[in-house]
Every structure is written in C-alpha cells, then in structure tokens.
Image 1: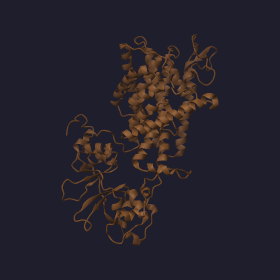
Image 2: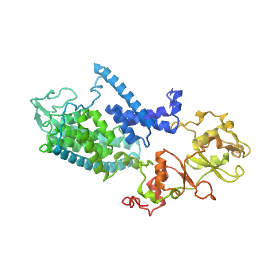
Image 3: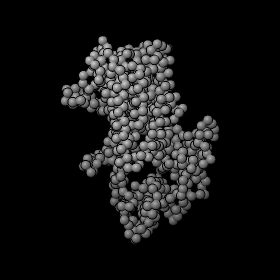
Image 4: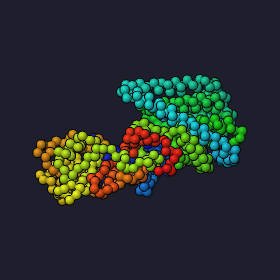
Length: 573
C-alpha cells in the first residue's frame, strides 16, 4: 500500500499519463523537484493510513521513514492527505456493511479492537515486558541479518531473467502451501471450551476455532492460525480471555513457520510486505512469553501478543514513534501506550547493536546513495576539497554549441558550473550552476548566436515559457541523443546566463566534510559547489553530489582511512 500510494503520487507529480489521456493542466505546478518529493511523501503516508486505518500513524511513518527532510508545510499536507483517506475509508466501510461488497469490507475502522481489556500493571509485569523487549531486539537483529543474506542470493537468481524469477516464486508458493496445509496435522484436536462466546468449531471462512479433520465438538488450534487470513490470525492471537486456546507446542511451530516464511517470501516477485508477517511472528512469541511468565505477571496473553508484535517491529524496522501510534490506532487500546513505548525503545536499542534497520539495509544493498541524517564521525577528519571528484567540466557564460553537446554526450552529470572569462569579464568569475535539463531545452530551441556576446534575458523568454523548463516525468525528458545539429550550428554560440542559477549554495574547500554533509541533507540539495579559499586560483574547485558523501566513494579515495576507527573517538578532530 505504501508503494502503491507513492506510485500514484509520482504519476500525478509528473502531470498524469499522456498515454492513457489522464492529464490535467493544474498538475503542471508539481513539475519541480521539491513539490514532487512532497507529493510522493504524502502518497506513502496515504498508503499506511489506508492499510492500517491509521491516519496519524501514516503521517508519522512518512516523517520517520519516507521523507529525507521535513518542514512544517509538508506536515499539514501529509495530515490533510491522511484525513481524506480516513473519510473515504469510513464512507466505503459504511457502504460495504450493507453486504454489497461480498467478502470485502468486513470489520470497522479499528482492525484489532482491544479497548474492552482494562490493563493494570505492576512492577513484575514491567520485568516481563523488559524481557519481551530484549527478545524482540535479538530476534529482530537476527531477522535482518538472515534477510540480508537471503536477498543477496535472490538478487543473483532474479538477475538471470524472468523464467528464474517465476520459478523462484513458484517454489516459495509450493513451500508455503505445504507448510500451511501440512503443519496443522502435527497438532492434536482440542475439545471446544465450554464458555466460548464464538461458535465452536467455526463455520465459514474466519473464526477462532477451525475443525480441520477433528471430530464434532473439537477444534485444531494450529489450523485456526494457518487457515485464516493473516488479519484473522492476528485477531486470534490478540484476543483476550483465551489463555488455554493455543497449546505451547502450537505457538512454537507457528512462530518458526511464520518467521522462516516471512524471511523467504520477501524479495520474490510477489507484492508482499514485511509488516504483517512481522506482526504475526511478534504476536506469537509475545503469547509464548506471556504464557511462560504467567506466574509472575497478571497481564492477559493477548496483551503480551500485542507487546510482542511491537517488540519485533521495533527490532526489525527500527521505527519507534510511527509504529507506536500505528499499533495504538490498530487496537484502540490507549492504556497500553506506556508499555508499547517501553518495549519499542528496548527492542530498537538492543537490535541497533547488531545491524541497521531492514529498510536501511535494503537501500544499501540496492546501492542507492541515501544520506543519513547525521554525518559519520570519520567525516570530521576530511574537508570538502578532499572528496571532490574530477575532472571538472565548466562552461563559459556564452559557450560554443559543439562544446555543450560534446560534454552532455560524454558525461552523465546533471549540473555544470558556469564561469565567465575574458573577454566577457576582466577576470574569471563564477556565474552559477546550469542543469542538464535546462541546457537541453535551450539547445532544442536553437536560439544560437554567431558571436560570443552576452544577450538580455528577454531574448530567451520571447521563445520559451516558464513551463518549458519544468521537470519532465520519469523517462519523458529530453535526451541529447534526440537532438540533431548541423556543422554550422555546432560552431555557433548560445548564451547560458538566462537559464543559470546565479545563487547556488557554495562552501569553501577547507570546510569540514561533516558540516558540508549536514548542510547538503538539511537543505535537500542535489549540487553543492566548492570554491577556493585563495583568490588567485580558478573560481571553482569542484561540485559535491550525493555520491561524494557515500562511504564507498570516500574509502576509494582514502583506502587507509578506516571509517569504523573513529566511532569511539567521535569527539576527536
């Protein structure tokens, strides 16, 4: 749902789809980097809000996981988005209550309502909860470690083409089916509880007591977990007043199966996520711990299942605030808030000692240049000028068309510094930064000059409108290969001044790399110009982009610099 929400937002952000004639003129206002990024963040928030019926949780998820930088305008935009989601959801749930939606639309806005349980807890309960948090951290760290190894194997298989992808998916499907159908045979039949509120054994598709090959008046507790939808299985585990409903052996088998199936299913060509398998596995071992520690704790095993789900989410995702609020909105159990907070913080702290969060690991594995909110300690020992990668390609304020075409074909750079040199100025001076997309629009317009002379801005804007320079949709932008020039045109000149950003962010070459990294991320930049400290040199040293702050790049430049050596001496330098 998060992915779907982000995809819809991205589609709207690039002006809709011309192919399917889904375009609107007003969508062109999103055709810039910042607004499109905001829109995708709101899309991700809408996905969480819809999946868990958690509007506030959606906003916090976007803040904690999706957005790389945050501002107050984005907060109310995301809040407005999730409010609309909640209203639409509510009206659809009301419509589906009339039975017009078949098997869809069962359940209300609160998915796993636990508000009927009155939780009072004492010191022994807190000890049990701390143990649960520690277990969650260990299981979460182990889960991320194993997932990392499995995904590396899967990426090798998936790279071999579609037939291997399909074969892998089919194999995992068969294994899942065998586990789901085969394992319930290991469980013994249990007589139906006398005081059961629900019908036992269950008739229909969902319920707490599945008969599965048992005689009348009996149910199979393992089948009650496996032969339900994941939502109903979580409801069964969270349900209170059901201390004796599940055997210990059943819970152990189910936990092992869900933990392992969750590991092998993520990363195959199936639209499946991690949230629900993690909640299921966490709720199962939460119930196990709750049953084992029943002698020292008075809390219901159903509440332990909720805390177990929280501890495993904290251990794998490493999210705290958003998971806490999502669980609160899922269960409507405000009394459990302090305990959920405690469990999340303990499990996250424990798991952080082993490895990074699951999403961070996948970002690293995909090789995406994601920047952390903080600068790494070793960056304090370097300056901005140390990591600038060359050679630097600059353009003159009025540049020959052939030089620009040649540079765009040879490099994949997105930004180029513009430097005015004699005869345009007395001494070389930095004018600013021009982007690849703007250069391509300018070249396509073919407003070329015969001589190297500076023109007025109105000369360019008579030919172009503001929206000609808007950011194109993914895969739709102009490419240098699409443009053709005659030999005469290649010898002509083009004035870059009207399309140059004359106030780019700059740093001095002696600035600490740690400070430059924080500045780069906090302002959401793509390019940071590095200028010399002394005046008698060329006016620009180089450009910093995201890739220049990545650990692999820095390690390539300084093989002797051990990134982990400085973690202990983080105050040094």
